[in-house]
Length: 112
Image 1 (cartoon, one colour):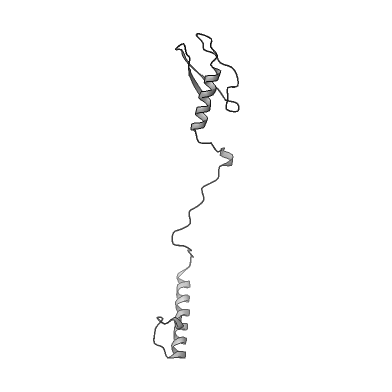
Image 2 (tube, rainbow, N blue to C red; image 1 turned 60 degrees about the vertical axis):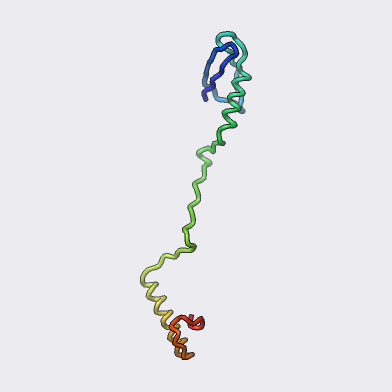
């Protein structure tokens, strides 16, 4: 990561570093006045890490769960299934009408 430090003497300097445990692995100093810039660099690193969301390593990333279809359960079926269901319903409705004399044609709860 790139760290930019502004020294009290007015000098600005930057460098690339790989922080260790969120801190500078080595000491840094201003190239003009020689003042230790490590505490300021550690502060910049801490601010950078606190403002960034935690990164998930690529090897551990989980795929997003697939959204469930709206409307509940979906069952794939063919036209043959529809015709078999219709035939079964018609048979039940006819049996109901024959047994009870009802002419409800599926409006009656008993026919279903």
